[in-house]
Image (cartoon, rainbow, N blue to C red):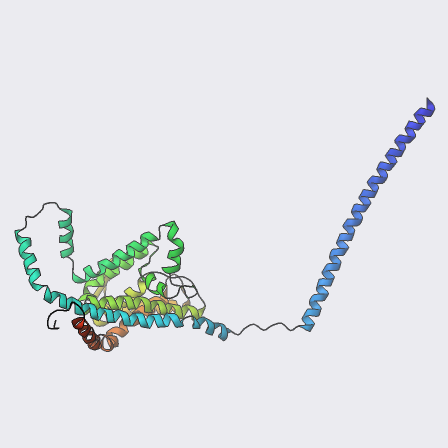
Length: 360
């Protein structure tokens, strides 16, 4: 019994010793592995540092490209917008001249039809409470300038609603914001003129346009006004492209402010002594000439100091174009439209369905 107990004790003691030896070996091996990894990491780091030192000694670092080269490549992207600006401006004034010709021709030919329409309107029974009649009365009470800008305001309201459609966000950002770093450069120059994301921004611009609509249309006519407005939108955007590229402050812009600034500048240049007032401060009045000087000075300071709340470059570009057009552009462009109108007149009289003797 004692022998059996001693054998069991020896077996138990050997098992305990084996277990201790295995445990010690596992711990040792673990420590050796951990120590080996640390040494390996140190060796890899030293080898990487040595390779880096050798690479620096043998290979000279490439110099950074000079700033003028980057600038020239950036300005090279503005070639297409420049061509688009010149071409669109020419097409706008050419189309306005043809529109004026067609309008005059239509008024002459429809003179007797208008007389007949007035006579029928008198003998036709009047409808009371008709919504269409009320709309027609409201429309007839508007001035020619207000009727002209109503379409512009409706287009801006439509684009504003499109901004609220989630599925159109990507397309709106691509085509209805102007950015010199974007893939789409040309058409956004025009489409961004009708684009507003903020309701306050759109309401302010449309109020200013509505306020100056009668003066500018009475001064130019609706055809010339539309050519000025659309051309100013594209020209002001191109001016913004140039300034953003030159300063490196790239980013999207949108709004009709550049085109409206051209309208405001044209009216203030033509009638510098006219009295203006701010809607929130009607008791303070100032001349149009002084208002224009203050606006140009403010946008110039914003452009120089890098203010980014407004696109001061587009504002300044639109204002300068409006001033230039009143002082020189009207003589150079609009008063020299007769060859184009004559060419169109000859084409219309020789074309199919042109009846009559070919006179207006």
